[in-house]
Length: 148
Image (spheres, rainbow, N blue to C red):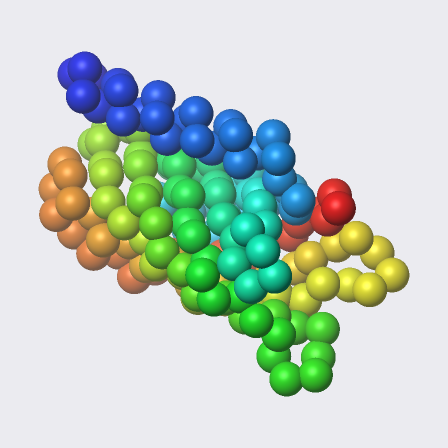
């Protein structure tokens, strides 16, 4: 791995560690996550209707890091369901190395009596480096514990 890739990886890992340490929801994401099949999943609120959604994924021959900004995070009508849309950088440290951007659209349910959030989302990836590619298969199930 060359110096630029190492510095970029350290930046993403450092950013993810900051988000994880201040996370308001922590849990797991199952499904296709940046080419892997399971991820540590964290959400950090940036206000009433905006948040960061970070994943550290494993299980596919490398480690993936996604840090997505969800500028749209709203309730669905008068229900306990929320929907969210977002985008952000995506990094895969493996063979081959991948750097790109991911989009995200999903819905989740926050239980009122238990601090648990369950959601389904779709996360397409546009890979720019090492090879340019589009991956539309990023469906996942999120299960997170609310900390605050």
